[in-house]
Length: 120
Image 1 (cartoon, rainbow, N blue to C red):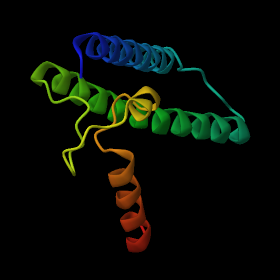
Image 2: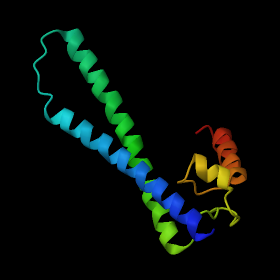
Image 3: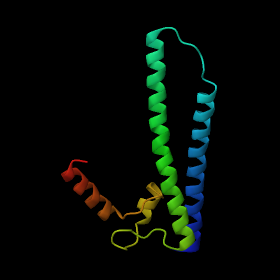
Image 4: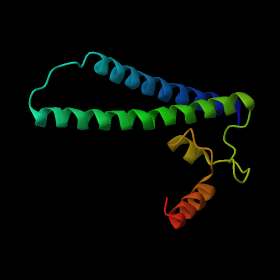
């Protein structure tokens, strides 16, 4: 991949990472200040449900940050945009949609097909 495109994807990944970290910080600060007393059991259940949902989202985002960090490392190493399964180049269209992608679309489809067969 040419240096201009690498720089573009690096900036895209850094921007995406920054947004995710900002969201995590926002959630952390809202949890820190959220010690309100709720007396109604329905309000308590609703608050706990909302909190659980928010934490599941943040956990998914934490995993995405790890994938972004891995992609940034691959840029530094010179292996960004290469499929980890077959060694072919990942199409630019795929990287535009998922810049943290590690598999080409063909290998990703095969992975998903196998997961479906195993019932994952």
